Structure formats: C-alpha cells, structure tokens
Length: 463
Image (tube, rainbow, N blue to C red; front, side, top):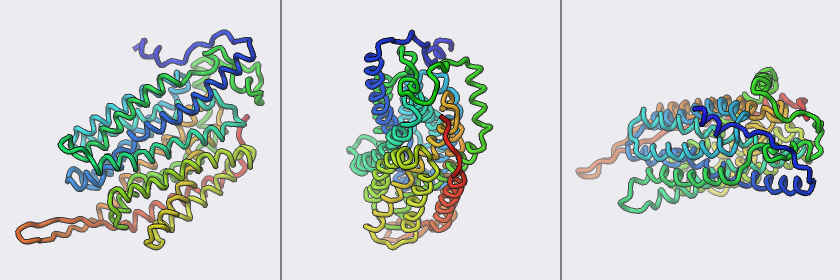
C-alpha cells in the first residue's frame, strides 16, 4: 500500500533552474504537451463513459434489459462518477496527475470489457458504477494540471480548449461507435458488445498517452510557479508547497463559499438536460422522430461537434470580452442553449430544422459546461485546491445526471404500450413509448440552471 501511495503521490520540488531561456523553453514545451494530450486523452476516455448510451436500443431490442433497467444501469455510472469526482477531486490535489489520470483510464477500459460479458442486471450495474468511479479520476486531474500550468488571466481560454474534449469524446462515441455497431463483423460477437470492446481498446491507448506526455507540477521539474513565470498578480515569494494538513484546511474552505453551492446546484440542473440528450436523445429520435440508429446518432453527433466551437468561444469571450468574468457569458450561452430545446422537442418535424437546433443547442450547452462544470468554481476557490472545488461541483452535477437517467427511464417505461402483430403463424411484438413528461422534466431543468447561474452576476474571481 505504501508503494502504491508513493507511486501516485505528487513529486518533491526540485531546485529551481536559473537559466531564464531554459525555463521559458520548458514551460512552452510542457504547456503545449499538457493542453494537447490532456484534451485528447480526456476525449478518448469519454467513449468508455458513454458506450452504454449508444447500445441502449440494441440491448432493449435484444430483450436483454427493459428501459427501466437500462436507466438504472446508466444511473449507476453517474452515481459512481459523482462519488469518484468528489473523492478523487480531493485526492488529485495531493497526486501526480499524470499517473492518477492514466490509472483511471486503464481501469475504465477493463470495466468496459467486463460489461461486454455481462447480461445480469446487478452485475452490469456494479461494473458500470465502478466505471463511473474510475472515470472520476480524469476531470480533477485535468483541472489541477490547468491550475498548475496556466495562469488566471489565460485559464478561461485553455479551460475552453480542454472542455472540447467532452464534445470530441461524444462525437467519437455517437458517430464512430454507432457505425461499428451498425456494421459489425459477422461471427465475432453481438452488435451491442462492440459498443464496449472498441471503447475499451481506445481507453487503453489513451492511458498510455497520458502517462507518456502529461507532467506533474512545474516545481517538480525545477520551474517556478506559473503565476511567477507569467507575471500574474500572485507574489513571487508566495510558497508553492503546502503540508497535507494545510491543503486539507484549504479544501474545507471551499465548502464555506456560498457561490460554490449555487454553482453546484446550477451545474446539477444543467447536467440533467445534458445527460438527458446524451442518454436518451438518440432513443427519442428513433422512437418519436422515426430515424434509424445511425441517423439518430448522426444528429447527436452534430450537437457534440458544435460543442467544440462552443467551448472555445466561451473561453475566449469570457476572457477577452468580459475580462475573465463568467456570469455575462453564462447568460448568453444559457439562452443559446435553451431556445433550441423548444425547437427540438416542440418544433416542426423537419430534419434540417432539427439539425440546426441541435447545433445551436450543442454550442450553447458546451459553453455552460465549461463554466458551471468547473471553470467558474476554480476561479473563485483557492487555486491550490482546484481539485477539491472541481470535485464538489462534480458530485452535485452527476447526482443530478444520475437522478435524471433513472427518473427518465421510469417515466418512459410507465408509458409503455405493447402491440402484437400477427403475420400468419408468426407474431411480432413492438413497444411504443410516450416522451411528453420526460421532455418537460428536461427543459424545466435547463430553465432552473440559467436562473441560478444568473443569480451570481456580481461574483468575482480570485487572483
């Protein structure tokens, strides 16, 4: 156990380099690697989190699980992720983030492989909950790296770049994995099993990339803090290392900031809508709009692709237009996210209108995700406990997402209508579902999120 803890522990500070040119060279080199590979690895790791969403309908059609059981399994990942993001957020402040992140990716891959072998409800639910917990290694490790390697005045832009990983991962899942399920090799397993095998292989590769290219804190390489190097407002004489007891006291201070609680509730509400679209959007498009599996996932892909632009635009706008103030940008992106929801669920049944609405929705939602999902909290919390701030927001966010998945599945299942078609001596059973009440639940959560986020208009970031 001591060896394991030592492996994951943050490294000791090295004597600081004195050559200014070498310090600049190393900062530029490592910062480039960190933002690129942190974004790529987090995006690749996402496919192991979302695999179940793509194979829900194939599993339901195969009679493996009912919609309510699928909702239960899906919610277990989100509960596991909520707990993992909270606990691992506190642990990440003490950890060597590259080892921490890589371990989470590898274990998530193993659990996806295990899911491909299970057809038992309790076992699948347990495996998916554990997958959620190990997925919770990623975001805290990444925000700690962001806080350590990028200063406050530029953090919005780089956080926006990293946040594109959500959309990259969702796009890879909903388009790439959907294609593989629709066209699986014959004789090598069932279509839904490929929805777990392929993500597992991708996640193993992502774990190797993270271990190879990410770095611990700058001080472990003999570099000054990023605030000192970037000539930020933090004093150069400020200590860069802290005892575990001091870190723990600072982590507890996060819980005493009222705005953090409001951000947590706003994020939780936003995640209800976000995961409703991620978890049930492709099923809704198949059941209600009449698209096939590939086309439905293509529409969801458009939403996630637009999210890449949304994350970058949010970071740039909040940094440059509003001097790193997040609330004005939150309101703008919240409205961009809300209006298309009414078109998606209550608008005309036109493919082009629906596609345009999903693009706008993805653009707006991803901006809110960048802010409420972590950036805003990191701005107003002490920087040396960025992982704890992220973890606190995360547990609220994913409890909301988990409740959504189960409540949505239950609401949909209660409307089930079974129709038996008789064709000579053979019969076929078709199930129909009504989405009226779940849709109202999803849209109302988005409205609540915008109201809560707007209430923090006067809150300012800490230097």
